[in-house]
Structure formats: structure tokens, C-alpha cells
Amino acid sequence: MKKLEYSNEDAIVLGEETVFEGFFKMKRFQVQYKLFNGGLSRVVNREMFERGHAIAVLPYDPITREFVLIEQFRLGAMATSDSPWLIEVIAGMIEEGEDPDDVCHRETLEEAGIELTELQKVLTYLSSPGGTTERLHIYMAKTDSTSASGVHGLDSESEDIMVHRVAESDARDWLDNGRIDNAAAIIALQWFFLNKNKLLEAWK
Image (cartoon, rainbow, N blue to C red):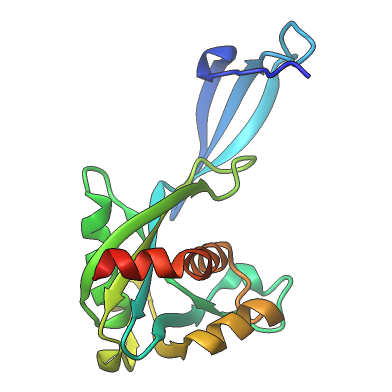
């Protein structure tokens, strides 16, 4: 089977307009793109959710063998979950001009009240490219989990974030039984369990 390699040059944006702007932004695009069998598609109208790009960081303590995870209310989970309070990794939006590494340190302090002593970017992914431009940058981090406790978050952003120290075995069970069911946390934890030895060797 012939391998087809398309790029941004094989799609044409004919129009772009902002249809809503509030806490987030929604844009409507008119686009044509190259078809696998040749030629161009018809003009397609698509709305795209514009929320910027984000980091997600998984702090781990190799001495206690614990993760620092957080729990908070997520409105979007109510439609399909028994509880909208989700177990998550620390995450935050990257503002214009910010370095993603700096965002990791800032968000970790704001959401969990802990410091990171090692920080390693391990992958990036598109959260849902059919409907949003958002790209997430996943990081692993070394921390002292014994200092993690309490409720954190910014009052100005109505954040109410509970911090949890979670043993490796419990986190693995939560992945297996679906207790952790949001993309960034699943991807970060799965990466950790697949690459734990390599990560810990790099931290020595």
C-alpha cells in the first residue's frame, strides 16, 4: 500500500471567524483538504474549540514510591460519570510567552503545594483534534511526597483541589478498574509504568 504523506500545505483555510468568546473561545473555519483518492474535498465548515495549550505533570517520590495526585470537580464529567470529582494529574494552561517548564513548577505549587526537584518532558499529544486545537505536554517530575497534603487552588479561579498521596500499587489498581478515567492522567501513569526503570535511572 502506497504511503501518503500530507502536510499543512495540503489543506486550505478559506475563512475563519470567532463565533463565541467567553471563558473559552469558539471559532468557525471553512476548509478544503486533499483527498486520499486525489482532488480536493468540498468546502467543509467546522467549529473549533480554542482553549490554548497545556501542561500536565505527574510528581513521583522514588523513596516512598508514591504519586502526588489531585482531586477536583469537573462539570464535563457529570453527563457520563457517577461522580464529577476526578482523580487527576496536576495541569495548567500555558499563557502566551510562557515556558512550559515554568508552568509545571507554578501549577504544582498552586495545585498541590509541593516543589519539584527533577522535571522531564516525555511526550505531547492532541487532546481531541476533531474539535479543538489544544495540545498537552506531559511531564514526569521527582518530588518529596511527604510534604503533600491539604486543599489547594486559587480562589480567583474558584479552584478547590484536594491533594492525595497515592501508592504505586493503588494507582495501578485505579487505572485497571477505571477509577482514573481522564486522558492526561491515564497517559501519564501508563507512560510511567512502561518506562519506570529508565526514568529512575535518569534521576540518579
